[in-house]
Amino acid sequence: MEATALPLSEWLAWLETLSPSEIKLGLRRTRRVLERLELPRPPHVLLLAGTNGKGSSVAMADALLRASGFRTGAYTSPHISCFNERIVVDGTPASDGDLIAAFERVEAARRGTQLTYFEFGTLAAAQIFAAAQLDVWVLEVGLGGRLDATNAIDPTASLITNVSLDHCDWLGHDVESIAVEKAGVMRSEIPTVFGDRTVPASILRQASDSGATLLLAGRDYDFKTHEDGTWTWRGPSKSIEGLRAPGLVGEFQTGNASAVLMLLEAAGLSDALDTSLVNEVLPGVSLKGRLQRIMIGTPGSPGSEWLIDVAHNPAAAEVLAKTLAAMNTDGEIAAIVGLLDDKDVEGVVSPLIPQVDRWIAMTADSHRAIAANELARQISNLTGRACLVAESAAAAIESARRTASESDRILATGSFLTVSPILKQLTTLSRTTS
Image (cartoon, rainbow, N blue to C red; front, side, top):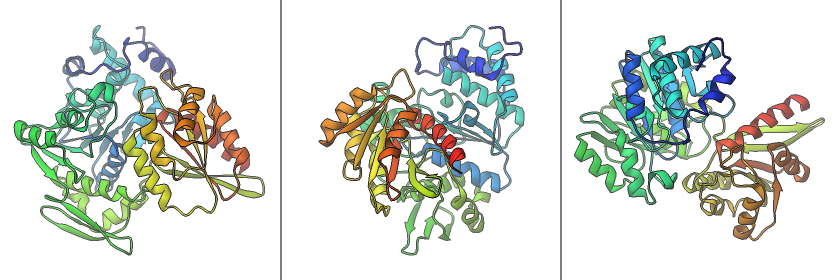
């Protein structure tokens, strides 16, 4: 590829043509190019895997580390607004110039090795982080763990948030099979935190076989929430009391925060476990598309509240449903749903049925999306209610707003590729109505 003076948009378009397969698991290609890049590694690499909660956990770990004085690089995927969000240095998304320079380095080292979009982006993140000479890399696993491109970079500590059904075509059709893939981030004598109290047998077996140091919720560390909303954390060497609830919405976020604190202690980053620092940092952490609340008004009216969440598998939908049930809503809830064709429609929709009054099916922004009319048919069959059809984010928003009162809440969910275009449209609306 002729890389001279190419803008970022052309690089990203070109990356989509690199591999005939959007997903191509395996470490050999990434390791080969990584060796050619000869990148220095930081003192600490934290690798975060799991079915749900990875993005939230990365955000909390990164915020705590930066507040403790560490220079960090945080890598997450996918993005919501722009690619730059995936690669963040000291809290600031990578600039177009930094991304282009990293892409050029990776392309020069590739030498014909076929990489996927995700693999190329992962290598670019490593290049940017190495150039910035950071103290800690915080890496979110993209898919699974064992064969994900991020796993080509050896961690000094890792976290598996939880294991549930998702990406079954790639990872396996039961929790134990999927857990084997997640457990691939474990290394001999390297600490791995498991964040869920229900531990698959294959996690325990892989820890034993690999010689990894497995730290379990409820055994090696724990947390307890109190009636006044505060919580207490207990780790192997210290306890922290009087903690304020995390700023990220949902009761489950306290569990994510607890696992993150254990990860930081296990990694030897205990400077981040100061009570006042945790209380200052965690309540202020926010993340796009994770139970994100937005008010969209009209001239002279406060308008309706929008709730944006990327829940795209049954476990995430169940958590979302519990959060909706705990919210006080005087009016009704309308849901805009868009899903990809490898997702469990029934598994995502069914938990939401008791909470949702009106349904709108949308075609997500992907060639792998379930068409809105087909998704609407399936939702109607599951709910026994009518489901409107919207072929675009703009049409879905217009349909939801047309029937919503000021006391109603509008939910958009099902995929990053659903909430991304909706958030863009809502940002435009907020500018025109403010």
